[in-house]
Image (tube, rainbow, N blue to C red):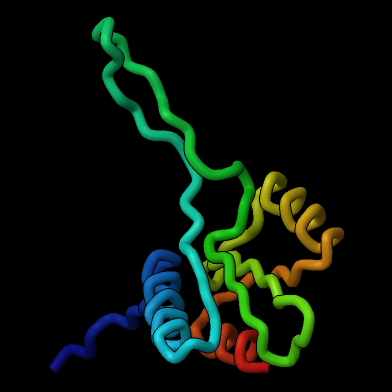
Length: 124
């Protein structure tokens, strides 16, 4: 009997992100935090003149998920930005720039590759 080839299952960024969103939704339902999935990009639409144009949304380089929680804070909330990446994913220059601006204002920025990492961050 032939052995099956060795396959390495690579988890896609969208699957990591979906799992993280599911977890955050549970925590939001418990009243522990609020979050949004921060989409950015552009979508083509046909204008009135029949020509294609693009509607832009979100800020280029902004994090995938934004989280707000008050646990451990008295007079303010904790602002967390989560950039979801696969095992080999890397930040773009725009993402690094956005991270710097966010952290300069006191926000916490994390590159996350699993829901377990997010659990440690938000439940800290």
